[in-house]
Length: 501
Image (cartoon, rainbow, N blue to C red):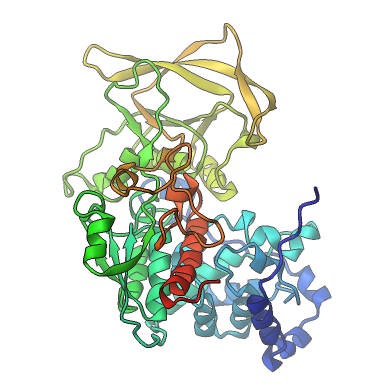
């Protein structure tokens, strides 16, 4: 059966067409022809020197200057049918904001972005644009580098913040209805922002002592500075979103108890914060962490500033991170900054199968991270004090593809060897915490504990309760979680206003 190409929803298609035909857009297209635009080389993002950046937690990418942003924006051919928009989970009007940057109207550009994305400074830094908007750019079909949409989004958001011109959109008439959001991660924050703009009384209940979810505790400072995230959170608060921290839904209060407080609809965006482990002998030894604990200690609890912040974490000399996704890259690059002489990725497949972003792999290689491919741990060996000192590994070879489409790794008999380590970080994925399902009777779950939803509406098996992000997907990207939150917000509006089909 042939897979159908994605299509523009009629409302989005109409908006894109109307803006495409605006006079100022026509003038910009006349100024530089397509043949001239195609000749312009992509403007690469300036970066801090690798040997300097591994000494601290400052941001790797420096950002565009206005001149660089305008030069990159000129590459955009302003396609009549912009497939880049189809690749964006939150349907940002990419051509319009890019053309506004080309015009020099940077504030106008960020206003267009914020029509559908309340966290542009975050998305511009951590979203996998190469697989989404940029991956669908017309240039890719031509065998050329795509327009740097992510860098331009970051530029517009940073320009607005630095210029002190952050505007709050007009809030629609208050609807007098309360909506509860469970979890202040990207899915919950997005749903909250969209619902607040619609006029709902929105409260986020967050289990940790600071909002942000994986954006706060999982992504290191050198990829997403906490100050920028907090400013994005402040924008949501100015929209009218209330955030209550240290509130564990299912323990502090159940969803049923919140209903008694007057909440008429719910969005569960509690993520997938429970780590998977390998289940190997010796995994209980000291010095072996889940990536969740390791990154939370360093990012949210600021262990890298011990003793100023009283959250110590061992600083190993030989640190092995098991896994090769973005979380693994974050963990191993963090270990390098904490003084590891050998910060190593140990991965059972080859480089070609690594799921991490291309940019994150590139940055890791530049920073001296060691990659040990086609290798899998078998057991962990401790010293007389119960601390890990070695890891027994086995070499692997690639066999036939598995369900993910990647070739399945197969152990090579007799290839076992010992690797000296003093810290091991397990970064092989996460699963949802079962607390909310356990305290919400009737909530249907999938095999690994994710909440089952109707993908068209993001509604769960219980009417009025919606869900999205990792609690549904079991571990995905920030922007996919945001897309879920946005879709759910519009469906919640339909549910509460009685406009559902």
